[in-house]
Length: 377
Picture (cartoon, one colour):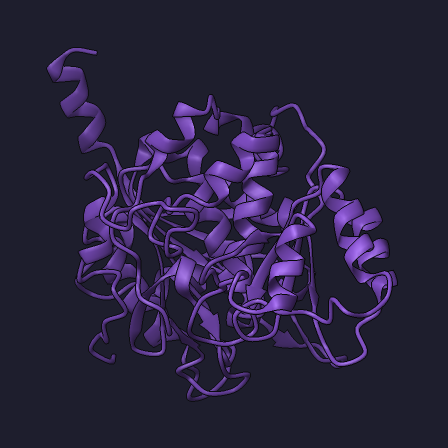
C-alpha cells in the first residue's frame, strides 16, 4: 500500500457502536424486560455533542440477546465482528448486558489482543427507556473513551473506566456495578507471545457466528465449578465430561479444596491425564493462588491442576476458551495460559513480572485503563 492509499484509508475510518442486547435497550412487553431488536436511532441520539452522530457507524449482532444467554460462541462472535471491521474503525463501543459483560469483554481482550484501537464495553442497570436511567451517562463515557486512541479492551460504567481482564460485577442494582479490585500486572507479553506458539488469531473469526460467509468451527466447551463444604468428586467427573476443553475450579483461599475427600484426588487426576486443564482459582476478591502453601493445595497440584494465579473467574474462563479456540494444546497451551498476556495475572512458574517491553506492556501503566474515575455526565 502506498503512503497516499494509507492516508485515504485512515481518513475513511470512523468510530463504531456495536449493539449486542442487554438491559440497556430493553422494554417491558408484559412478561418482564425483553431486548429491543434494533437500537440504532436511540444510540445515535445519545452520542455526546463532542462527537457528531454522522461520524459514527452502527453495527449489531445477528442475534440480539439478554446477556444471561451469552456463552463462548456469543463472545467470540462479538470479537469476530469487531475484527471484521478493524480496518474501518478508530475505536469501538460495545453495548452489552451486564450479567456477562466482564466475561465477553475479557474474551475480546484476548481474542483481539493485536488490534491497535480502543474497544470499550458498556451497558446499563436500567433501560434507556426508563426515567433516570444510567444508560446515557455510561454510553457517553464509553464514546469518549473510544476516541482516546489508546489500544486495549476496557469497561466504561458507573463513572469509571476499568480494564476488562480485571473487571468483576459487584452489584445487581447500583450504578457503580463493576470494579477492578486487582490492578493490571506490568510486563504484559502481548500478541507476540501467542504468535511464538503458532497461534493464528484470524482462526477465531471462523468460530464466531456473526461474520457472513465465515466457515464455522465447533466452539470449545469450558466450564466452572465452585468448591463448597461437602463438595463431591462426582461433580468433577461430570464437569470433565461436559467441559472437555477446560475446567476452572474456584477454590478456597490460596488454592485449597477438600482433597481428603475419597475420590476427589482421583477425579482431578483423571481429568488432567485426559488432557483437560483444571485451573485452580481463589474465591477471594484479592490475593493469589499458591498451591504449594497448604498440603491440600499441594495435593491438588500433584493431581495435575494448574495455578490460576490471581485471575478473575471471568478472565480465567475467557483465557481458557480463547486458547482452546486457537487450537493450542498440551504444554504450549499451559505455557501461554500461565503467561501474562494483557495484564490479567501475576506471573506463575517463575515468569518475571518485569519482562521485556512489548506491544502492550505500556498498557499496564496507561491512565486510560488503570481503573480511574471519569467525570459524570
